[in-house]
Length: 369
Image (cartoon, rainbow, N blue to C red; front, side, top):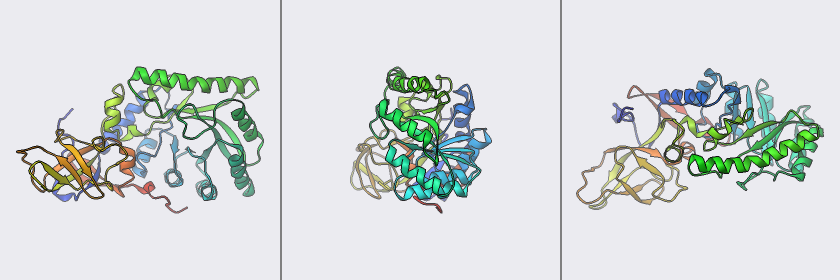
């Protein structure tokens, strides 16, 4: 691998801070994804990471037909691209219900689905679609350990499943099980994922005993992707693979994805003898992790973050450093997904040169609907 693959020859043309995307690396990651599973039809990549038409179009061109998303804007973006099958991995509540109805009407060639985890919400969604003479496919969102959303597998989850089989306006599709709490080595993640998925298997067995034999399952994200890829008919929905990031590069060493998106920043000030300040503030890099776990600089790995604010990041460079205002730093986000959402566009680099831009169209809460 070329050591300085990230360097931009015409860097003087790029204002900072900037999100930079490497399309050839994105294509390589898509190829790698397909090679890691027995059937591409079992892939349902999540759009939350890239939020772009361009990345979606590259996956469509590679024969990937199923997608997952988290927002109405992402659902609309996928519809705009002509994605054949889209699951809104979110339970629409309040105004989102009518917005989702409108998206399904605007893009009738896309088969849309959503999640439900309780009967009152399912009833609201059912009524909204029945009112317009339509039916929406739904997946029961199972809580298998993350304790964020979903219904605990068991009697109440089966009652919800049965309700969805009968409600006018709904069509039951299957189960959704996200094990986002899995962390650690591949061995540790495998153990955690298997323990969580055992709850799904119990649910499937109970449903089959009741005569429900055609139950689809969507499971996992990036950390558990290699594990669910071995589960026969389970659909897998990694998202970060498309750009990858430092967190998963370090944690998921068994997954050979390449860093395909970085942030570029410049030194703007030397406040004292040992610190430098760059223009990579909270508004340019995800700041949910503690301060030393937000960005890793490829061409200056020794730098340590000491303070962070809206437009500034102060780094400890040490005595006798040689940094000066205007120096360019190339950073790999620790968490790429929320970093992408901070930028209205990603500038593309091919063969070492700036070539264009991808609009991060679905970073907006609303595109048109």
